[in-house]
Length: 259
Ligand SMILES: NC(=O)c1ccc[n+]([C@@H]2O[C@H](COP(=O)([O-])OP(=O)(O)OC[C@H]3O[C@@H](n4cnc5c(N)ncnc54)[C@H](OP(=O)(O)O)[C@@H]3O)[C@@H](O)[C@H]2O)c1
Image 1 (cartoon, protein in one colour):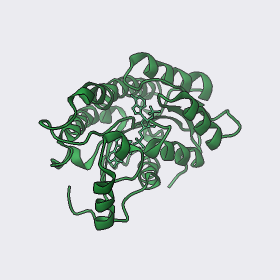
Image 2 (spheres, rainbow, N blue to C red; image 1 turned 120 degrees about the vertical axis):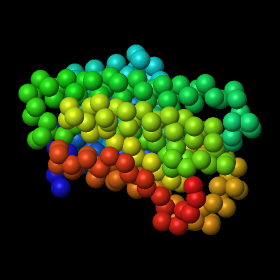
Image 3 (cartoon, rainbow, N blue to C red; image 1 turned 30 degrees about the horizontal axis):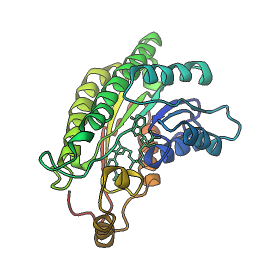
Image 4 (cartoon, rainbow, N blue to C red; image 1 turned 180 degrees about the vertical axis):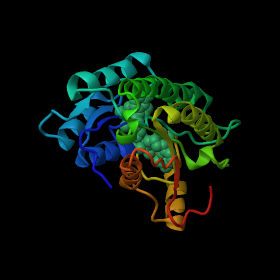
């Protein structure tokens, strides 16, 4: 398998968890990386930690649900890393404890805006950019991989009794990804859905899980995944030769029985 030398990556939600680990992993494999999240100070510290030179990991703070922030990320890829982003990881997202009938409704709009609308906007802008770049190269895509990797969830495939409102957003993501894959695959863009099971990160706190409940899950099915485990999977997807597409990857802790 190749390294990612010369690839231009964008990773949203990179101030913590899966996004941070992915940015670090892609950088170590040779990619330049634009990183995004809302907490500007934390994002800047992550950029410095991964690449002390400040040249190949570029922080662009902002809300991944906003069109302006998305435009700024893609522009930073061009101006600071020298080209159209060709490895975009649509990762920013959040969970929410509970179902449609018992989750905290005051958090629905933010979650849907980030998980569904933000993902759709970035898939659209980055995907069209990659397809245009492939066309401009006159079909050279066979030797130039281009990737849109979207983070769904196992609860976007199997209805979870403890987080079905969040799961609904990931069902939406799953449907959109397959639609975009059908549109852009023939143009040389690999559109990939990565669906993790339990990953220990800031996710559980943000979602409002009871720590004792989550510890019970870890005690029962652990070791659960760490962000680095998902990052490695994304690296494997991106390093395939351009004509090979691992389009759907469901990655669970080995002992996770359900969902
Ligand atoms: N952990 C799991 O068990 C699990 C399982 C399946 C799927 N996932 C999915 O994996 C993705 C990453 O989750 P994680 O586990 O790494 O969670 P995490 O540790 O909470 O990290 C989430 C990241 O997204 C950023 N973020 C949240 N809302 C944002 C917004 N509106 N705009 C920009 N950045 C935003 C956060 O940074 P700021 O707060 O600084 O913005 C943070 O960097 C999510 O899509 C999640 O749904 C997680």
